[in-house]
Image (tube, rainbow, N blue to C red):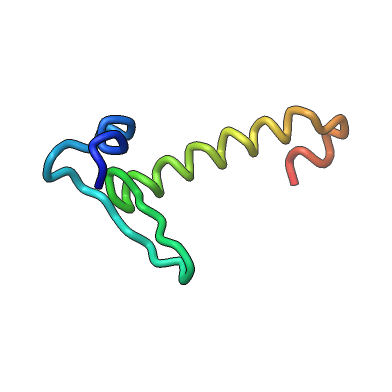
Length: 63
């Protein structure tokens, strides 16, 4: 992995990364799959809350 990417994503020598084969491309996850899952959960929860905040009908926000 190029040094520029390692520095950008904070990957130290011997640091954990995960690779997911997408067929025509590969997804590289700094910190491994556990860190990626935690970040995805955080982002989805944040976006979900933001989406609920713009719904004007209180009956829909608790469904």
